[in-house]
Structure formats: structure tokens, C-alpha cells
Image (cartoon, rainbow, N blue to C red; front, top):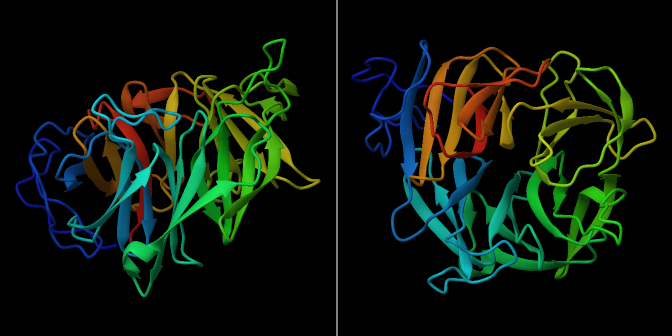
Length: 351
């Protein structure tokens, strides 16, 4: 990615969108977006029409995709206006909306698989869950035939599904809202699934459970966890000291970040970091130059933050908005006033 020339910068705020090609895109007023010194922010994209509830974000090639939940309930219940469908919107490298798809249910997880040229959307994080794929070839979708709907082979944790992450062609989907047993415990239920697609079935294979044994990075104590609200996941760049190469799973209501190395193998090893706030999503700066995309659910905007990043720096969309995450203490510090209602995060390194 090349960063476009800054126009009209003042007090760390700029009102020109920054696109993948370095060309100014569909900017809207960014006067309320404040960032620390040395950084700039702009509204990269804004979805028109009646879509609401911007949430997760994914990248496939030079396109960005954002899921809008449109008020649909966490088990697919109709919105107050009777709507039962979420919308996935595709934006080009200039921030222009080029396509959208209406999917039954509440889109809560969005990922992309460059090997199969597919965007993957999980719906209904609390129950009645299923998953969709949107297929592309040579950067173009196949119209109505691009979308396929899959039902899970099984969800032994008893709840729904959330975040989608893809690593080397392997699709991982978070197991959310586990069903408690007669004693009120959810311990021992899958926290993450590996998912493969065949016909109309998404076959699930548990990767690790919500009571995985982990060492606390603050106290040094080791013991089983009891995650109750598995939410988002991502992969930690190898440049991050001590944690590089891990899969990060966020226990949202538990205020815990779980880092698992060699997940699903005999060499699996986990550490846990208590967090100062609840976290909705996490992203890492994989290079010193690039763009951090932040979904502002309140305004339906995708905000682009550029500047000189610290390689391996962690960002979190937390209860009080976008913040930086200290990977030693778990403390989250506000990153200016970017998107007080931040949701999905995505870091794209400069080309």
C-alpha cells in the first residue's frame, strides 16, 4: 500500500481518504477523528442506503468487506423493523462501494481465504448459527451464484459462532456462547473449530477447549481457564516478542486474551493476559508503515489511520474505543478519539 499525499492536515486530523492505491477516495468529514501526534486519520469508506450496525472487516486482494448487522438478533431474530438479514458490503481500493450481499441472520464474523478466493461470514453468535461463503475469481464475484450457505455438521459447545480467521488455507471459526451444564459450568466445551466446506455442510473439528491450561502472563501462575464468552481471534505476527506465531482468542466478557502456540497439536501451549477492559477485536501492526482500518459502528464508517507504527504493536477495539494494548500488563490506553464505538480492526502493511 502507498499512502496518499496529505491534504489540509491540522492538529493530527486529515479529511482525505487513503486508498490501497494511494489515491484519495470517498472521504467524508473526519473533523471529529483525533489521533496522537505523528498519525493521521480519515474516513476511508461509508456505506450508503439503510444498512446499520457496522461490525467486522476483512480483506481479499485489494477489496475490503464490512458486515452490517441491521439490527438482527443474536440468534437471527428479526430487528424491530422486521428485518432478518445482514448486509456484507464490498469496497474497492478507493473506498467506493461496488457490491453488497444480504444474508439471513446476524453477521458477526467475517474472514477471507485468498487461496480459494472466498469471503466467509458466520451468522448468529448465540444460537441457530450457520455460515456463508462469497466466491470470487480474478477479483470478480459470480453474481447471485457467488453466495453459498452452509449448515454446521455439529456444534458440540451448544451455542453459536463468531469470528472467522484463515491461516494458510485453513479456516478457523470461534465457538461463542457455550451452553452451561446443570451446574452452570461451560468448562470443557470447544472454544475454536477448524472448518471445512463440502456440499452444503460446514464440517467442524474442535481445536481446543474453553478450559485450556494456560500460564498467566502477569502472575506467572498456571491452571485451567474457564472462558465463557469466546469472541474474536487473530494471528500474532512473529515480530511480537514471546507471543509471535500464536493464535489469539479473545474472551470478551472474561476480559482475557489467550495466546495459543501450536494450537490443536501435541505441542500446544497457552498463556493468558488479563485485560483492563472488554475487547471486541485486536489487530497487530505487522510493519512500521501501513494502514490500520477501524470500523466505527456508530457512524457506519471505515476509518483509515496512517503513520509510523511500532512493529508488533497491538491495537484493540475496547469498551472506551480504539486503544493500544500493552502485551505485558494487559492495560489498554486510548488511541486519541478514533471511533468511540470501534468494532472490527484490520492492519494492512505498506507495499
